[in-house]
Image 1 (cartoon, one colour):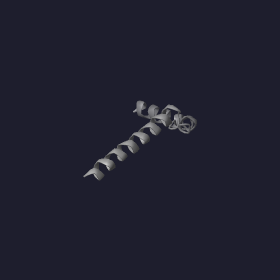
Image 2 (tube, one colour; image 1 turned 180 degrees about the vertical axis):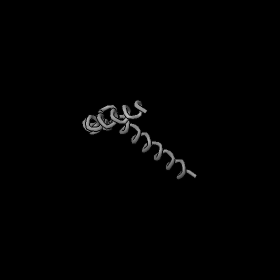
Image 3 (tube, rainbow, N blue to C red; image 1 turned 135 degrees about the vertical axis):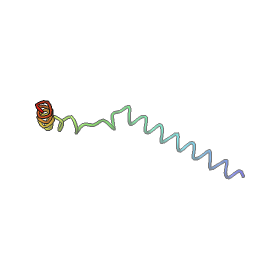
Length: 57
């Protein structure tokens, strides 16, 4: 029975370490999207043309 308590304790410690690493990575901007804003301008004209076509109908 003591082995189960040991494994639960270790798993909680590992989970807290992963949570800490995740929060630290989010705060440092690891998951910021740098690619989409640079490509978004390439598709703006296409969406504007589609909007004007639907408004003419």
